[in-house]
Image (cartoon, rainbow, N blue to C red; front, side, top):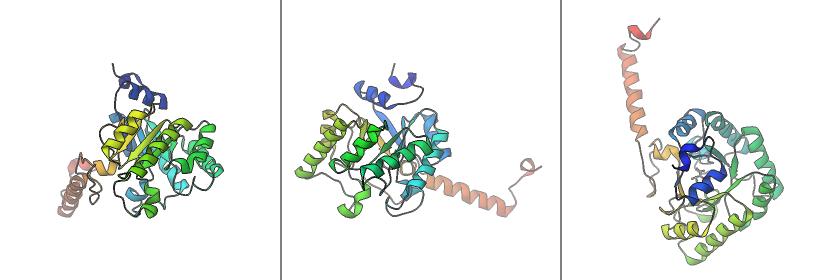
Length: 271
Ligand code: KIV
Protein backbone atom coordinates (compact mmCIF):
# COMPACT_ATOMS: atom_id res chain seq x y z
CA UNK A 1 0.00 0.00 0.00
CA UNK A 2 1.31 3.50 -0.74
CA UNK A 3 2.18 5.83 2.12
CA UNK A 4 -0.63 8.04 0.75
CA UNK A 5 -3.65 5.98 1.83
CA UNK A 6 -2.65 5.68 5.49
CA UNK A 7 -1.92 9.31 6.30
CA UNK A 8 -4.27 11.57 8.22
CA UNK A 9 -2.11 14.72 8.10
CA UNK A 10 0.86 15.01 5.81
CA UNK A 11 3.95 15.93 7.81
CA UNK A 12 7.53 16.67 6.84
CA UNK A 13 8.32 13.07 7.88
CA UNK A 14 5.72 11.74 5.46
CA UNK A 15 7.45 13.64 2.64
CA UNK A 16 10.77 12.01 3.53
CA UNK A 17 9.04 8.59 3.58
CA UNK A 18 7.51 9.26 0.16
CA UNK A 19 10.97 10.03 -1.22
CA UNK A 20 12.51 6.91 0.27
CA UNK A 21 9.70 4.78 -1.17
CA UNK A 22 10.12 6.38 -4.57
CA UNK A 23 6.62 7.88 -4.51
CA UNK A 24 6.41 11.33 -6.11
CA UNK A 25 5.19 14.25 -4.01
CA UNK A 26 2.45 16.60 -5.21
CA UNK A 27 2.40 20.27 -4.31
CA UNK A 28 0.19 23.10 -5.61
CA UNK A 29 -0.20 26.69 -4.54
CA UNK A 30 -3.23 27.84 -2.55
CA UNK A 31 -4.21 31.29 -1.39
CA UNK A 32 -7.87 31.13 -0.36
CA UNK A 33 -10.31 28.92 1.55
CA UNK A 34 -12.49 27.67 -1.31
CA UNK A 35 -9.81 26.50 -3.69
CA UNK A 36 -7.63 25.14 -0.87
CA UNK A 37 -10.52 22.91 0.24
CA UNK A 38 -10.75 21.46 -3.26
CA UNK A 39 -6.99 20.88 -3.49
CA UNK A 40 -6.97 19.21 -0.09
CA UNK A 41 -9.92 16.93 -0.81
CA UNK A 42 -8.43 16.05 -4.21
CA UNK A 43 -5.42 14.65 -2.39
CA UNK A 44 -2.57 17.07 -2.99
CA UNK A 45 0.04 16.48 -0.30
CA UNK A 46 1.46 19.97 0.12
CA UNK A 47 -0.30 23.30 -0.31
CA UNK A 48 2.15 26.13 -0.78
CA UNK A 49 0.86 29.54 0.17
CA UNK A 50 3.27 31.04 -2.33
CA UNK A 51 4.23 34.67 -2.60
CA UNK A 52 3.02 34.18 -6.19
CA UNK A 53 -0.20 35.42 -4.54
CA UNK A 54 1.34 38.80 -5.29
CA UNK A 55 0.96 38.03 -9.03
CA UNK A 56 -2.12 35.85 -9.30
CA UNK A 57 -4.26 37.25 -6.49
CA UNK A 58 -3.18 40.89 -6.39
CA UNK A 59 -2.09 41.48 -10.00
CA UNK A 60 1.40 42.73 -9.23
CA UNK A 61 4.13 42.25 -11.82
CA UNK A 62 6.52 40.62 -9.31
CA UNK A 63 6.38 38.83 -5.97
CA UNK A 64 8.13 41.70 -4.22
CA UNK A 65 5.21 43.86 -3.06
CA UNK A 66 3.31 41.27 -1.00
CA UNK A 67 3.59 41.87 2.75
CA UNK A 68 3.92 39.57 5.73
CA UNK A 69 0.42 40.55 6.91
CA UNK A 70 -1.02 39.68 3.49
CA UNK A 71 0.77 36.30 3.47
CA UNK A 72 -0.65 35.57 6.93
CA UNK A 73 -4.14 36.46 5.70
CA UNK A 74 -3.83 34.05 2.74
CA UNK A 75 -2.23 31.35 4.90
CA UNK A 76 -4.91 31.44 7.58
CA UNK A 77 -7.62 31.06 4.91
CA UNK A 78 -5.83 27.98 3.56
CA UNK A 79 -5.30 26.53 7.03
CA UNK A 80 -9.05 26.72 7.73
CA UNK A 81 -9.71 24.68 4.59
CA UNK A 82 -7.05 21.97 4.56
CA UNK A 83 -7.57 18.96 6.79
CA UNK A 84 -4.85 16.74 5.35
CA UNK A 85 -2.25 18.65 3.37
CA UNK A 86 0.95 20.04 4.82
CA UNK A 87 0.76 23.83 4.57
CA UNK A 88 3.95 25.69 3.72
CA UNK A 89 4.04 29.48 3.60
CA UNK A 90 6.49 31.69 1.74
CA UNK A 91 8.36 34.25 3.77
CA UNK A 92 7.80 37.34 1.61
CA UNK A 93 10.53 39.60 0.27
CA UNK A 94 11.96 41.78 3.04
CA UNK A 95 10.80 39.57 5.89
CA UNK A 96 13.98 37.48 6.28
CA UNK A 97 16.89 38.87 4.28
CA UNK A 98 17.83 41.67 6.69
CA UNK A 99 18.86 39.67 9.72
CA UNK A 100 18.30 36.22 11.16
CA UNK A 101 16.43 37.78 14.06
CA UNK A 102 13.95 39.46 11.71
CA UNK A 103 13.66 36.16 9.83
CA UNK A 104 12.80 34.29 13.03
CA UNK A 105 10.24 36.91 14.06
CA UNK A 106 8.58 36.70 10.62
CA UNK A 107 8.49 32.90 10.70
CA UNK A 108 7.04 32.91 14.21
CA UNK A 109 4.32 35.35 13.16
CA UNK A 110 3.37 33.07 10.25
CA UNK A 111 3.21 29.97 12.45
CA UNK A 112 1.36 31.67 15.35
CA UNK A 113 -1.09 33.81 13.39
CA UNK A 114 -1.95 31.45 10.52
CA UNK A 115 -1.56 27.98 12.01
CA UNK A 116 0.54 26.79 9.04
CA UNK A 117 3.08 23.99 9.39
CA UNK A 118 6.27 25.26 7.75
CA UNK A 119 7.86 28.21 5.98
CA UNK A 120 9.77 28.51 2.71
CA UNK A 121 12.46 31.01 1.83
CA UNK A 122 14.60 31.68 -1.22
CA UNK A 123 18.38 31.36 -1.43
CA UNK A 124 21.34 29.28 -0.25
CA UNK A 125 24.44 30.33 1.69
CA UNK A 126 23.19 33.96 1.75
CA UNK A 127 20.29 32.98 4.02
CA UNK A 128 22.03 30.25 6.04
CA UNK A 129 21.92 32.20 9.31
CA UNK A 130 18.21 32.85 8.92
CA UNK A 131 17.51 29.21 8.08
CA UNK A 132 19.49 28.08 11.15
CA UNK A 133 17.73 30.46 13.49
CA UNK A 134 14.23 29.59 12.25
CA UNK A 135 15.00 25.88 12.52
CA UNK A 136 16.33 26.37 16.05
CA UNK A 137 12.84 27.54 17.04
CA UNK A 138 11.40 24.23 15.84
CA UNK A 139 9.91 25.64 12.64
CA UNK A 140 10.33 23.40 9.57
CA UNK A 141 11.98 25.18 6.63
CA UNK A 142 11.71 24.47 2.91
CA UNK A 143 14.49 25.90 0.73
CA UNK A 144 14.12 27.35 -2.77
CA UNK A 145 16.98 27.41 -5.31
CA UNK A 146 17.42 28.08 -9.03
CA UNK A 147 15.12 30.81 -10.28
CA UNK A 148 14.26 32.72 -7.12
CA UNK A 149 11.65 35.30 -8.18
CA UNK A 150 12.34 37.61 -5.23
CA UNK A 151 15.73 38.30 -6.90
CA UNK A 152 14.24 39.11 -10.30
CA UNK A 153 15.90 42.52 -10.47
CA UNK A 154 19.29 40.91 -9.84
CA UNK A 155 18.73 38.25 -12.55
CA UNK A 156 17.01 40.63 -14.98
CA UNK A 157 14.96 37.80 -16.57
CA UNK A 158 12.81 34.79 -15.69
CA UNK A 159 14.90 32.52 -17.91
CA UNK A 160 16.34 29.13 -16.95
CA UNK A 161 19.00 29.39 -14.21
CA UNK A 162 22.22 27.47 -13.59
CA UNK A 163 22.93 26.55 -17.21
CA UNK A 164 26.56 27.58 -16.70
CA UNK A 165 28.93 25.40 -14.68
CA UNK A 166 29.72 27.99 -12.02
CA UNK A 167 26.09 28.66 -11.13
CA UNK A 168 25.28 24.93 -11.26
CA UNK A 169 28.13 24.19 -8.84
CA UNK A 170 26.91 26.88 -6.45
CA UNK A 171 23.39 25.50 -6.62
CA UNK A 172 24.65 21.98 -5.77
CA UNK A 173 26.62 23.35 -2.81
CA UNK A 174 23.66 25.39 -1.60
CA UNK A 175 21.38 22.35 -1.81
CA UNK A 176 23.82 20.33 0.33
CA UNK A 177 24.12 23.20 2.78
CA UNK A 178 20.34 23.54 3.15
CA UNK A 179 20.08 19.81 3.78
CA UNK A 180 22.88 19.94 6.36
CA UNK A 181 21.26 22.89 8.12
CA UNK A 182 18.09 20.82 8.48
CA UNK A 183 15.67 21.94 5.75
CA UNK A 184 13.03 19.28 5.14
CA UNK A 185 12.76 19.86 1.38
CA UNK A 186 13.97 22.16 -1.39
CA UNK A 187 12.08 23.69 -4.31
CA UNK A 188 14.15 23.70 -7.51
CA UNK A 189 12.81 26.25 -9.97
CA UNK A 190 13.60 26.48 -13.68
CA UNK A 191 16.93 24.69 -13.94
CA UNK A 192 18.14 22.10 -16.47
CA UNK A 193 16.58 18.65 -15.96
CA UNK A 194 20.01 17.04 -15.65
CA UNK A 195 20.91 19.35 -12.77
CA UNK A 196 17.54 18.63 -11.14
CA UNK A 197 18.39 14.93 -11.37
CA UNK A 198 21.88 15.31 -9.89
CA UNK A 199 20.67 17.42 -6.98
CA UNK A 200 17.70 15.15 -6.25
CA UNK A 201 19.89 12.06 -6.26
CA UNK A 202 22.52 13.67 -4.03
CA UNK A 203 20.08 14.60 -1.24
CA UNK A 204 18.20 12.58 1.36
CA UNK A 205 15.53 15.27 1.65
CA UNK A 206 12.98 15.56 -1.18
CA UNK A 207 13.28 18.10 -3.97
CA UNK A 208 10.13 19.62 -5.45
CA UNK A 209 10.59 20.83 -9.01
CA UNK A 210 8.94 23.51 -11.10
CA UNK A 211 10.55 23.49 -14.52
CA UNK A 212 13.34 21.31 -13.12
CA UNK A 213 12.61 18.09 -14.97
CA UNK A 214 11.08 14.71 -14.13
CA UNK A 215 13.70 13.45 -11.69
CA UNK A 216 12.77 15.73 -8.80
CA UNK A 217 11.07 13.93 -5.93
CA UNK A 218 7.92 15.95 -6.44
CA UNK A 219 6.39 18.64 -8.62
CA UNK A 220 4.73 21.97 -7.93
CA UNK A 221 2.72 24.29 -10.15
CA UNK A 222 0.90 27.52 -9.51
CA UNK A 223 -2.73 26.37 -9.32
CA UNK A 224 -4.08 29.31 -11.30
CA UNK A 225 -1.66 28.45 -14.13
CA UNK A 226 -2.47 24.73 -14.29
CA UNK A 227 -6.21 25.45 -14.17
CA UNK A 228 -5.94 27.97 -16.99
CA UNK A 229 -7.15 30.98 -15.00
CA UNK A 230 -4.01 32.91 -15.92
CA UNK A 231 -3.78 33.17 -19.69
CA UNK A 232 -0.67 35.02 -20.76
CA UNK A 233 1.83 32.97 -18.74
CA UNK A 234 3.01 30.13 -20.99
CA UNK A 235 6.40 28.75 -19.93
CA UNK A 236 7.45 25.42 -21.43
CA UNK A 237 7.21 23.61 -18.09
CA UNK A 238 3.54 24.47 -17.58
CA UNK A 239 0.92 21.83 -18.34
CA UNK A 240 -2.60 23.26 -18.40
CA UNK A 241 -5.16 20.77 -17.10
CA UNK A 242 -8.17 23.01 -17.68
CA UNK A 243 -9.07 26.16 -19.54
CA UNK A 244 -10.98 27.76 -16.70
CA UNK A 245 -10.73 31.18 -18.31
CA UNK A 246 -12.84 29.91 -21.20
CA UNK A 247 -15.22 27.94 -18.99
CA UNK A 248 -15.80 30.85 -16.62
CA UNK A 249 -16.21 33.32 -19.49
CA UNK A 250 -18.83 31.05 -21.07
CA UNK A 251 -20.72 30.69 -17.78
CA UNK A 252 -20.66 34.42 -17.04
CA UNK A 253 -21.81 35.28 -20.59
CA UNK A 254 -24.65 32.78 -20.28
CA UNK A 255 -25.67 34.32 -16.93
CA UNK A 256 -25.66 37.82 -18.43
CA UNK A 257 -27.75 36.66 -21.36
CA UNK A 258 -30.21 34.80 -19.06
CA UNK A 259 -30.68 37.89 -16.88
CA UNK A 260 -31.13 40.19 -19.89
CA UNK A 261 -33.67 37.86 -21.51
CA UNK A 262 -35.62 37.31 -18.29
CA UNK A 263 -34.84 33.58 -18.35
CA UNK A 264 -33.17 33.84 -14.92
CA UNK A 265 -34.60 33.47 -12.35
CA UNK A 266 -37.29 31.00 -13.45
CA UNK A 267 -40.27 29.65 -11.44
CA UNK A 268 -38.11 27.24 -9.47
CA UNK A 269 -35.57 29.88 -8.61
CA UNK A 270 -37.91 32.22 -6.71
CA UNK A 271 -39.90 32.22 -3.45
O1 KIV B 1 5.40 31.47 -4.86
C1 KIV B 1 5.28 30.40 -5.48
O2 KIV B 1 4.23 30.07 -6.03
C2 KIV B 1 6.44 29.52 -5.52
C3 KIV B 1 6.37 28.35 -6.44
C4 KIV B 1 6.53 28.79 -7.83
C5 KIV B 1 7.35 27.31 -6.07
O3 KIV B 1 7.41 29.77 -4.89
